[in-house]
Amino acid sequence: MRIFCCEDYADMSRKAANVISAQIINKPNSVLGLATGSTPIGTYENLVARYEQGDLDFSDITTVNLDEYKGLSGEHDQSYRYFMNYHLFSKVNIDLSRTNVPDGTEPDSDKACADYNAIIDSVGGIDLQLLGLGHNGHIGFNEPSDCFDKLTHCVDLTESTIEANKRFFEKVEDVPRQAYTMGIQTIMSAKKVLMVVSGEDKADIVAKAFAGPITPEVPASALQLHQDFILVGDKAALSKLLQ
Ligand code: GLP
Image (tube, rainbow, N blue to C red; front, side, top):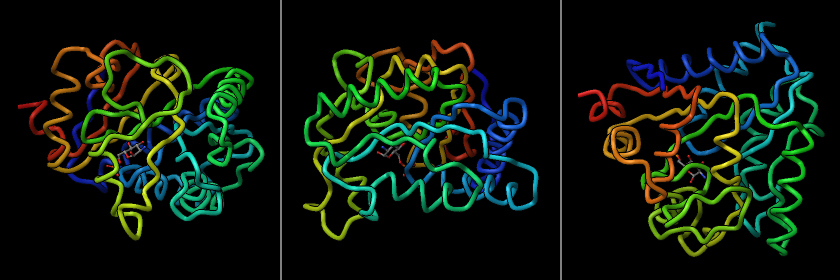
């Protein structure tokens, strides 16, 4: 595990974009695992700026996103498909047909998950997986549990996650109660994993996940076992890990 301690959110975003840019330049046909949430937005802004400067080419890139709310279509402005189109895909020269997000409109969970696992297999696995971190240690939507879920599955979101994500919806009742998410085994199979963390409110969970025991109660703790895991965080988020 390598840790980059950054001055602030802008610095974190630039350094995370450096890692992703290096991946794209070294392997122009990379498969990128992508994440949503507020933390990676600055990273995407940096990638778009580098594309606009002519330094990055997304034309051979394939993407697989971590998760999607069950019940939301890609047109819903809180769906993760919409988020990705808005923050990245519509702003770079990526082939949209090579961007993948679980199908939130598929009501049959088993089918939605099997289809997504098949897509991940068909693209040959993930070269670099970008992750944020939930306040309860979730990655993607792998919530605290008594076992590590391996592949794509349907999860019941915890109250704390619903509470954290309600800021994006008009009212709390609008937050979907379920989501489809990539499993821990798939995330751990990525050749490289990059996590971005920012803000004092993440300091406790960052310390718990990366200096505490490896347990499915803190899903991100599994990353301690990954061979090429890079944690890029600002000083505030890393304050309790590095003290
Ligand atoms: C959501 C996403 C996660 C993300 C988390 C943290 O629950 N499913 O992938 O990491 O939120 O979001 P934020 O970066 O806004 O704190």
